[in-house]
Image 1 (cartoon, rainbow, N blue to C red):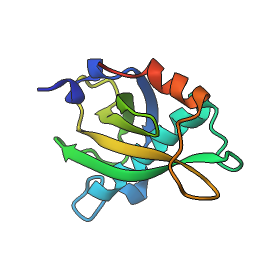
Image 2 (cartoon, one colour):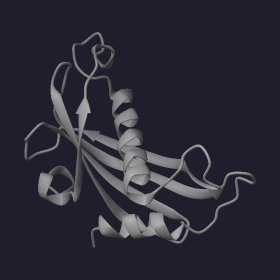
Image 3 (spheres, helix red, strand yellow):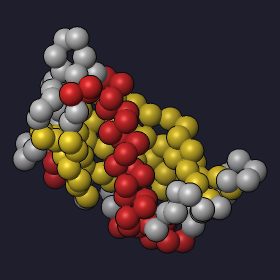
Length: 143
């Protein structure tokens, strides 16, 4: 086991409500849905803790990389939790670590990374992470 697949490796958690449509023909949450969970928790954190205004902010995050390791299946109607942390924080980019846990479980059913590069909305050129967002990211950064 690694820190990435254990609950204690994460600094922030939020609930995930699985949906009927998340299940695939095999009766479990489809692999592609996990990336939607990753995107949702990263943006929820940026909005709630970093003050990101997704409609009007001049600086926004673009996803440039993601990965996921699947350890055990989950399915609708299970209650899940997403653990969130910052693995690496650069000048204009951040790599998040995200774990998907069955509610209350100590070991992740899936975990991975999700990388944002912050860009100027009007030019799509990379820029420094805004101070309010950087402060929120520092709060969940792991060493």
